[in-house]
Image (cartoon, rainbow, N blue to C red):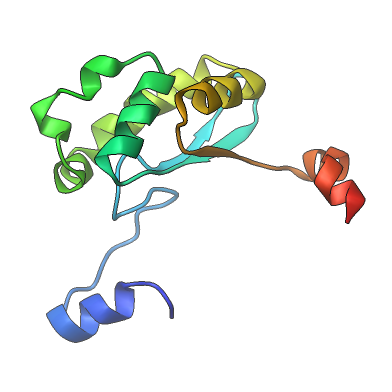
Length: 126
């Protein structure tokens, strides 16, 4: 019960509905499939992180779009933003995705399957 859900309910009487793999507090933020059938998770609620994520997918135009100028506005347009980022990830292999986001200082991470965990140098070391 460390999430904001109990506070929303207690203080506002608000019952948040299910949203699947998306994040209801920032956008874009969800789990996306890559071209090579791997998975990544993306988040970043600040304007600086949002801008880095947009640069990572080659869409700096989204940074200046007034519909996405703040996190609360991005959350209102989450479906559209998540579709844009999902489509981009679907066109690129995991390694490409990670390289582009690292270069742009974006906020993304792989979601490992068991074969990736077994092959990870840190997991092996532990």
